[in-house]
Length: 308
Image (cartoon, rainbow, N blue to C red):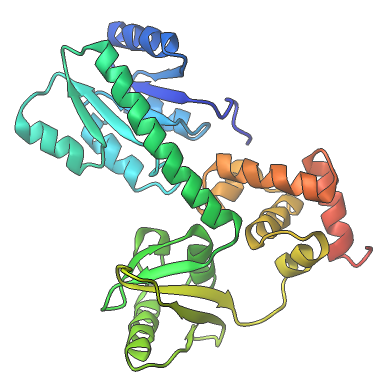
């Protein structure tokens, strides 16, 4: 399902107090942003299945799912983990502040709140989020299969495209969150050992499917940085990329579009936000010379079915 909200500066406000929500909503709106309100944790989760805000302002003490538990849950969800969370709460003890920050929040504001200060903090965190999102979209848009490992072969981070490639070989792994199955872990440990010995090699599953790896020597890098590539040259994505001069990621989005997947479904499959999917689609429509998904699907299928 498509996002029902515009991809502007949406701010999700989560609080069980109607008065607090009213005051916050008016402040956010007066500052030129677009408030969306949720009266508790469950309501917030329901909204986040339909839209991706730019930032979340969260109360800590709420019935049901409290703010700390909700924040931890959001930071485990790859679709919204990148969204900054700011706590605004009456809990002022140092232990609560630490708990809020350890749960994944970028800031912790205690009541009574000076609204001008809150807006200033929100703007700073939103600006930082935009910079991070821009860099991530830049990597993603070029289809970069990048992965960083520590000296033991554990995954430090990887781009969504690399995570997707690894999951295609090792379906029960979760590279986006740094976790790997036993067989993938063994492959990654051996990969680091080969690099230390001055060699290279592939990552291969038990069925013999493989990914090529290229070790990237980057000055001052943390860990071992690799570029991944498919060991074979087949596939629908490559045919579409060659036909329309698409990036790897754009061709992947076009394949899923041709299969009838919505933006939200593609975001879950590819571990990227629906907003990023939409950006890819805009570029795809331009390159294909079409105006909508139906036309893009028709053009893509002509190539895939050999009618081009």
